[in-house]
Image (tube, rainbow, N blue to C red; front, side):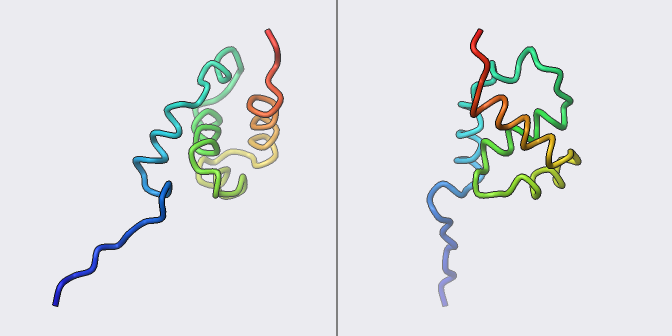
Amino acid sequence: MMSQLVSLPVGQDAATRRARASVVPVAALRGHDLTVADRSALLDCYATPDRTFLEIAITHGVDRERLQDLWFDLFLTPSRR
């Protein structure tokens, strides 16, 4: 009997998430007082939009409300310089 290969839905494998994360506007994170955990969680939010802020916050050990506020402040309404 032949073994069946498991196929992942398009865009759900680790390589795709890593590629998506690599095009993050990292410049948006510069110049802000962010901890390593905050940066990591923000990049995780960008790379895995199918996960909730709560899941990501728990994974990285950050406050969900702070993570959500940072996300909206940095990526949805960036300051104009």
